[in-house]
Image (tube, rainbow, N blue to C red; front, side, top):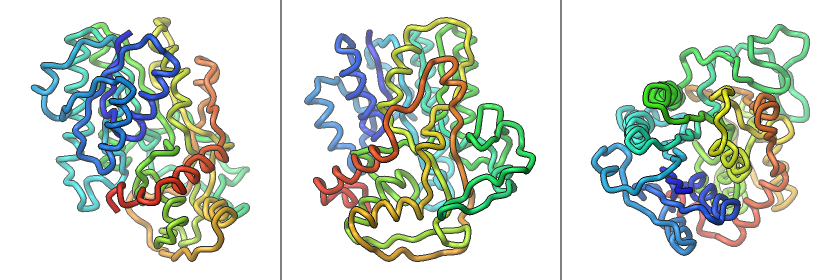
Length: 354
């Protein structure tokens, strides 16, 4: 089988590539990347050493796809993953849409031409913000949790956010670019007869992630704590009670191997996240870091940023029912892996562009 990974030199893409080669030793792996992200050269060298054929390709440019080899499947891990993208002054809103949506169109045109299956790594941020900010929260062990006894909106429970939860605007420019990509992918697959899977992932985390405050928060927090860099709890009173779940990208590999050989009529859109057991608040993450590295001050900023939400945990029950899928890497193992890597790479925050 020939597999092409878009965005292969990012954290998710490079981790998936390495894990796919281990799980599918007979597979031929190609990858494309524009190499503009800080740290992508680190992953390029590693992947070339593994024998992956890499192509310099800007997914915004349709002509860059003309010389790519034919693949049986495409895994789309190419995106600007920051929920603040397009509004924070780092890139423009047009650049965000060009990367995350128009780039997807070019990948889908490649799939159409080559009749290649398409796997989209989408995001939990396609879900509506307003209902999550209106839900009543309580604080337990320095973390928000859903207050029991209230009437939850459809698709929300103490187990997390399911596929039935609203995707109504506002969901951020980033979230809307991913949601639009999902719709286009399904329409392309239906119109031109190639298989499409849309996998909505929670926060991806693990060793080798180039952490930043607006993306890769788990890797950023551990690396910054270790290096005694400034940290701050932002919004919701500035206490660090906001909660996210995390998922290691390699835990998606058993899913992908099934999706690439499965043709039955099952839902094409599903959640894949760490769930309640792999969730933690920023305050809890600080406690973990404090236990490993000692105390470190964290500033408090009460003001909310645009698109902030207090609690987001993915309910992947449908994936368990349909694919017998569950996250295999525990939260503790993910954090330990990040910390071990941080200790071995003292320059990691600088490589992340910070």
